[in-house]
Amino acid sequence: MLNFTTEERKVALFLLGLAFCGLILNNLIKVNARVEKLVYPQVELAKLNLNKISLSEISKVKGVSLKLGERIIEYRSLHKEFRFLEELKEVKGIGRLRYERLKEVFFI
Image 1 (spheres, one colour):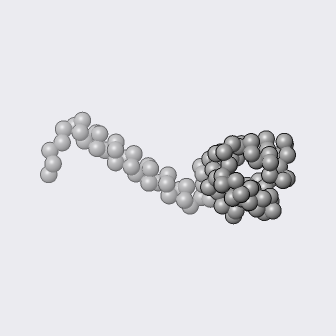
Image 2 (spheres, rainbow, N blue to C red):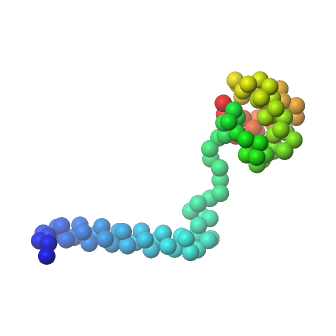
Image 3 (cartoon, helix red, strand yellow):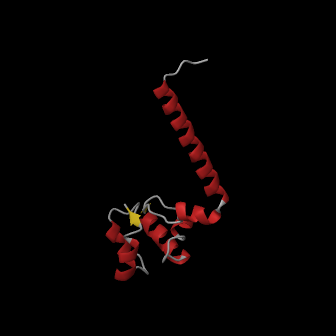
């Protein structure tokens, strides 16, 4: 048997107890869908790269229709890529208000 000092036994028991509590908490989160929504909210926090985004991804953005997404992709392919975010204003269908909302979602 291993010869542990009293302090080493206490530390080992503490770590085992902590690991056990973590396993229980992990299983509870997976089982209870309501708790999962609180722990893993369905919020996109990352901005999207306007020069790399696909049509399917851009059409999922709130406030961007499929038609507007096609115009954005078409503008990007005609001009090689966006150099500045303000170029979005040159796309038909993007005015000042829509641009203000979209500049929070995209980056160059």
